[in-house]
Image 1: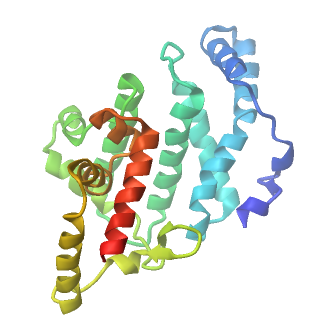
Image 2: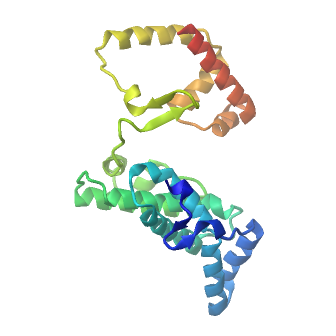
Image 3: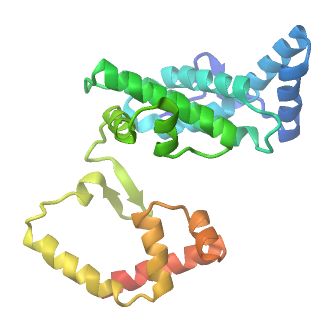
Length: 260
């Protein structure tokens, strides 16, 4: 496993340097404003000082059967892009900007080697959309909406959605989606026959269980599991702390479990 791998691409991961945030900012400023020789040295130090970041990101993809050395090299390309495109005027930590860039580069690599064939036009549209997404994210310091991407490309938003969906890598039915340390839920556990009587009965039972929740608990579960928001986003929306959201969410799920 990659977690126990000491050497990757000839690099001894146990001896990788770690840069402080202040040092990163100094190097990034030198890369933008220094002399050619200063920029070269700063860029090399910045790359070497963030290889641990690349290593931590590619560990998310270790269950896909890809060669760790290949993923590490691709992740380094994403790191270099992040360094070259980072805006020092934005009050953002480098890792906040760099991690999505590295993940994006790895995902592009995985999509290129996807066994499902996608038409050239769809693939081109999808890659153009991802490039626009990265650029708008860097400019606005947030992920753009589908509408914003479509407007930038001057194409219907439906085309953007179809293109991006077409290059999503297939997910194994046995890929875990949740684990609390004892029970693991796999993708196949979330699938079923809509005509199955058990599904119909379970649906009724779930509706009855939801009635036991108060309005705030229902709102939290709706935002978290139907709209896909993070606990921090939910906290901001309903005006409480993230810790309170976590506590209320856990209590609501426990109520549902008892009712079922």
